[in-house]
Image (cartoon, rainbow over all chains, first blue to last red; front, side):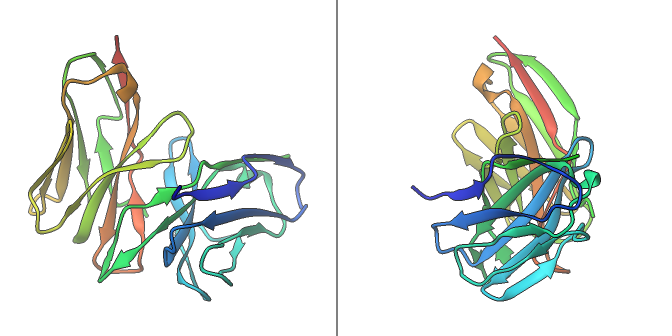
Length: 115
Length: 112
């Protein structure tokens, strides 16, 4: 089944304790992206990757890191989480054709609480 | 930056009625997409319309695009309770970095 798998689904952590949210896709998509979703603010892009070893900042990259060493994996790293990073996180992947980004496949989400 | 803005923010209808949601955006686009999200779950891609298309259908969904007005509408015909969800438009802008920018969504409630 074509899918984007995120882990964990739920995570409660303490301020400053490094964490990684994993994301893996099995569709051979070049393009992968991370979003956070907050009430009243919608989905905001954190980082994206157009292919292996190619990553770039989205609208809200502060406090996050990513890496793309393999095509299928795109982990999101919070080196020193803070309470304002409490949010619902989504990973998504897509293929690209020409200048267009086509339909995203989203993961099921990771609900992160930082206390 | 928020590119698309949906209108209305919330919509409540009865089963069998049609639901119309609108999206306005600011810059030229390659394509515009609509997604559905059920209560905190992952978003599901519904339909994509390219900038050179004016209307597209998929089952009970009809999407229109007016690039001169920078607006799109999503029509769901003969709504069902299972259509209850939030609906988002997303735009793939022609300029700037490669990304889909989402609006804040329309929350649709379909009552039996």
